[in-house]
Image (cartoon, rainbow, N blue to C red):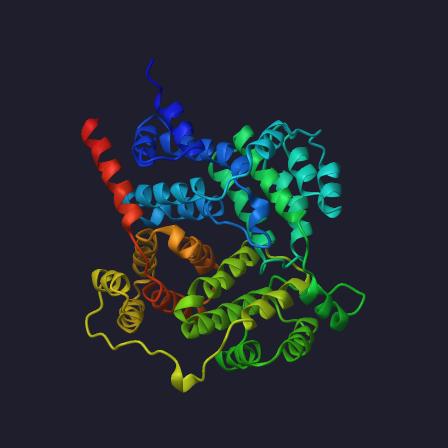
Length: 438
């Protein structure tokens, strides 16, 4: 008896072969096929991946799924499906647990009590935290909230815990809050949070802020460009001591979240302009972390100090040595996409800047999303789709100047980090052949 498209898809997820993309194409041809393909991938792969072997890092196959779904409204449908197929292929090829450990993980199930979940995280018991999450009856965003509170002051692996908790919760929402998939996502978030912590920056900030908590208001940005630039220079150029001394004083003096976010995005964009090819993805991660801040708006001043320390972590060039955009007389989306895919950063920056001067911000974002979706995510650890989804989240919460700086810097970064598109082309062919069959 022939297998159904769903059964074939699950088989490919468990043991991927050259039939992976045809199985994906057949699965998404079913009613609610995209949603169900992602749900099944999460249910199957989260227990299988050898997360322990990657520590202190985190593979981005599953994490990048939220980014691709976030970019869907910005992409032509065919390009979205290509990007989703490549992202799922990446997740399916990440390192696997041993059969014995996989059997234990699949059978693990706790009571699902929130207090137990938090207790296992705080006790640094990842396996028990994951198992406890498998007992939650109907996982929702509310189940991720206690974990998110534990994540904010833990900057292990440059803030991955807060980002993962936020994005996995949102992925659960985007998929319609399925029960079994939600338990996997909640379990992964809890597992990651229970791994060893890094509170170095938070403790350094706390020494300057004193015992009473300093809360950062959610006020809109009010700083002038001159005042913004002065703060950018502190964040980009000072050492950690200087940054924390200056920023804690400003936060205690009333600096609001709107100004803090705008200045951090300006600083992160400058760092991205200065990034070497081998540091493009890691430097772009700062914007992914800042997007998490923008979505959650934590009021603890220590969190904003950590964000500044993270941005400062990456190298800054002298202004006179910084890459400059090529002047463009007649900018276009097609020329922007071509410049990025041809790995020409200066023309790409010029095209983006020119379009922005003509009020084409949405067109620039869509074009950058198309460029990111064209790459094999395995080549760049899914950093390109992650940072473009972050940009889409950040733009509505920023004033014009940091919006422009971020988009121009992303054009440079994408052009400077082009990789293979072979995986996407295989997916594209399978999708085209499936379309011909229907």
